[in-house]
Length: 108
Length: 114
Image 1 (cartoon, each protein chain N blue to C red):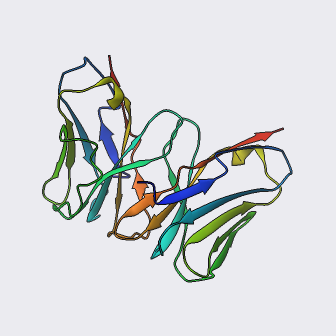
Image 2: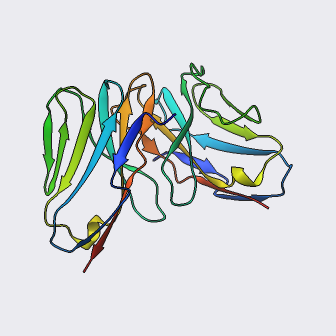
Image 3: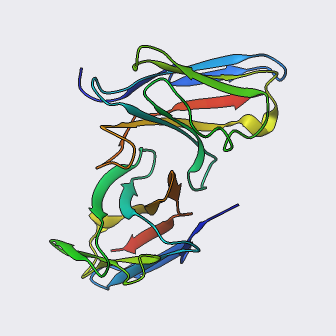
């Protein structure tokens, strides 16, 4: 069954607003990765988090890995239309478990 | 070779026929993954290879699905007696090793079963 849950499933924001997607696992993960999939495209790697409580930033994107290594979040500050796409987390235990994804729509 | 390639890019088949999907990973990547993505849905893990071995086949939806990898390179995913619910994009990814650091995805094969 599904071991990694991701919320929300869909999010519509006005351009310039912030956006956050959350990823929760029922079990402790070795690491977590985040991917972005543009409409019609394939997933593209964004980042990997390994350490408990780790925070990484990429320009307007901030990624966090929870202290218990069971949850993670991706926060985008001041969204732009180029941020449109579906964001997936992927947690590693004995294999990669992908979250259900959050589809982000940015309204200009 | 640049990235992961998959063939065919599109496949339309009649219900009941067998299909074979091919994945060419990035050279030197020991780990190879197969996923299924239905329209508007997330990624469903099917199987992964470490070298030529598949340690965990529990993700395969039914015994109609099988996969193999040879030479720690090319992998094929075979679906026998296709059903309409098999219609989806089948994505292949490879990485240096199991666990990352990152998976590189191919463009996928869009399978339509009529």
